[in-house]
Amino acid sequence: MAIVLASKQLFSSSRPVWWAGVLLSLAIGTLFYLAAHRTIEYDAGERFLHQAQNAQYNISSRINAYTDVLRGAASFFHASEHVDRASFHRYVAGLDIANQFPALDNINYAHYVTDAGRNRFERALRNNGDTALGYPPELHITPSAPRAEYWVLTMIEPLAEFREKIGRDIAFRPPVARALAQGRDNGELSASGTPIDSVHQPAGAGLALRLPVYRSDMPLGSVEQRRQAYLGSVGIGFSVPRLVQAALEQMQVRDARLVLYDSSQPARTPVTLFDSMPECKTLRPHEQFSVTLPIEFHQRQWQAHFSAPRERWYSRFDTWLPWAAMVSGFTGSLLFFLLFHTLSSSRMRAVKMAKEMTRELRTSQARLQQSHQKLRRLAAHADQIKEEERKRIAREIHDDLGQNLLVLRIDVDLLTNRTHHRHPRLHARAVHMLEQIDSSIKSVRHIINDLRPTVLDLGLNAAVEWQIAQFRARSGMMCELVDHDTDIRIDDHGATAIFRILQESLSNILQHAHASLVRVELRHAAGMLSMTITDNGIGLRDGSRNKIGSFGLVGIEERIHLLGGACTITSSPNGGTIVAIAVPVGGPAD
Image (cartoon, rainbow, N blue to C red; front, side):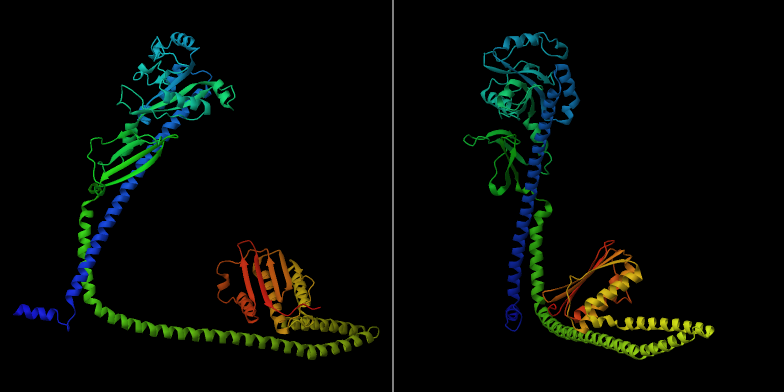
């Protein structure tokens, strides 16, 4: 009875549907398990592929290293007019191939002999006196059957292990002969791909690379010239198992299998060159990782097939991780389901609060922008009032004080003329007074020009020329004006603003730039008035534009903004400063 009541309470519509949460959590836990399993499988596959690519790179690197050894041996033959067995022995001994190139079996030289010169060649080798090095006293070309061409091994190191090969014609097999003839004609590396037979290693476990050797004093421009200069072929023999096994040992998993094929002839079945586990049981595709990677072996295509059991690439942690992910997914989903209602209500409250904060923020931003616009208008109005007040004061000084000083100067000048002969002492006093009046008139004119230059009434061009002339006289700098002979029509407010910008820029150059040359360009084109002020000074320092109490550049930008124009200020350390402004104005005067 208690169980029935508990069941009714559990599945009652008035309570949360707990069983739905459990099923959902199980489904999510299963997804977590599958995702973790696939991720681990993918990571293991990537590790396997990375290790296989490393092995591929190591094999290619070793082939290239052995190729460099072969090229060095060929260069040794080309650099010497005559290479005997003793010098060849010393050269190979210096390479220390046993330690530096462990997969390298030998370095050898095969002399090219035609059938006509065979007997002479054999007699010459019998009388060379190299038995002290271990070479046999008698040499006969083997196989002894006559052929049109022979490539006879006359030198090989280390000799003790390969003495039986001295005198062997390596071209008695047609594929090798074709490769040697091709290398002779084109002067490049040749590799027949034919396995080397040797008593020192399993059958077919060795391969060879060869380079042609020519006479150094003969031209090699054409095939015929190379055939005339041809001496023989220097070659190396190396062990494929040792070459591949050294690269395979660097893989993390020792159960990895590598099968190396030679697939240079697509019409034929690929030749197996190496199999690290020939007796290994073949696994099913879903039980192993496998990849086939190409290896370039001097115009021959090798295929390296790597395979390894999947479980060998999984750690103990990888085995338990999917189950841990499933438990975590189930537990987390169930907790999320239990907290969903609380979180959803909290989210609604948070959204409402965020909307309220966003509304208040936008209102504050609008008020701030409005306040910013008001401040700009106030600054513009204050600047306009200041200019008008300057203009008024300058006019009153000119009309009142200037006229009074002028009248006073006329009277003193009359007094000076009348007392010139009669009253010398009074005349000297009058002359001194006249100089004081002239100095006062100059001061008044200077004050008027500082308040508002009267030259602005003659137009912007005249005002700019006057200001540059004043700057030259005051600073001693070279200042160039380029105005393109254009009469600019602009209202008094705009002309005053541009003139003040020029004043501020020249003042900054004089105080801070340490310049020796200033260039001012005034241009009026396409309804735009542009002015560019350039100097060769030290430029602006970092943070100078935001310096506390410095409003010169800010004032320039604000003036241009009020005129509806654009202002750019560019500078570089010790590269000078460029102030460029552009404002819309009316067309040029006719």
